[in-house]
Amino acid sequence: MNALLIGISGGSGSGKSRLAHDLATALGPDRVSIVPFDAYYKDLRDLSMEERNAVNFDHPDSLDAEMYGHHLDGLMNGLDIALPVYDFARHQRMDDLHILPAREIVIAEGILLFAFPELVERFDYKVFRACSEDLRFRRRLERDTVERGRSVESVTEQFAASVKPMHDEFVEPSAAFADRVVDHTEDLDVVVRELAQRVELINA
Image (cartoon, rainbow, N blue to C red; front, side, top):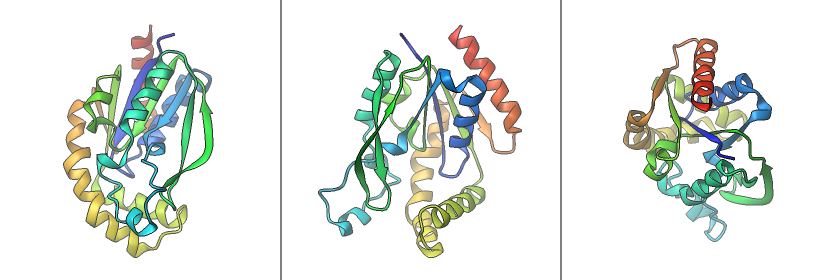
């Protein structure tokens, strides 16, 4: 089994996860496995909470690209993987693991996905979700305050201190590696149909 590997990247709040899930639905959920890169943040359990909070989680160094690459290779070769489960509140991996089955199409999605050359070279097709800074910030603010219990002040400070600088340095330039850049103003249903057709052609 040699699975088709699709990469979907874009800034935090750009809508890349929505695009990945909608594409998987269009292709047939029983044919697709989605591998989120943000499940692969490095395990910081050996650091104090103060040290963990000082880590720049928007820098590529915060992610375990080596493990991610190995897991992608496993899925592409027909092997199920043990997907890590990350605790974003404590900045460490949980003891629980999620078994992700190998399927004929694998969608990798993540903010810094195209910032690693060794990952980029694995993909059969690459999509970048482009989105304005203002909209990305508003989406991130809503997610982090509602889903992660953070204050408006902390989210705003983090966006200015690390999210925006790292986006400008690593994420935005990585759009150059994409085969297709999808702007947030495009009709998502039309884009999903287009991408599904493209994937089917590559997979034929």
